[in-house]
Image 1: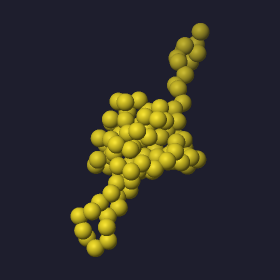
Image 2 (image 1 turned 30 degrees about the vertical axis):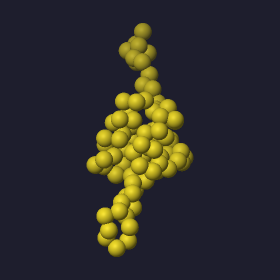
Image 3 (image 1 turned 60 degrees about the vertical axis):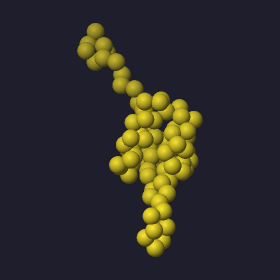
Image 4 (image 1 turned 180 degrees about the vertical axis):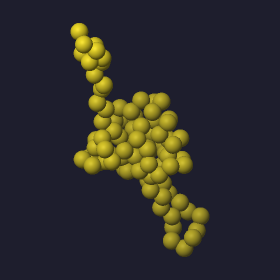
Amino acid sequence: MDNESEQPQSATRDVIHIVRHERSKPGGNEWRRLDFSVSFGGKKDGVGAFDVGTAYGFDDLANLLSKVGVSQPDVAEALQALRTQPKHEP
């Protein structure tokens, strides 16, 4: 057997894209809301991805990700990353 046939094939994994949107009340008040756009697919830069939904806040995002089958460790990682980053792909 040659070495190529002995090596396992790498699994192709689709990507979940999460983008954080911050909305604030006009006029500079302290009011701020976080929305998250969630899409699936498009292994390279989101092209070809389809919309899964929008989440309003971190709790709603955690629920949405769990519903679409994201593991709890990946949900926790996404929530942590999105506190400081505008995008994440768990």
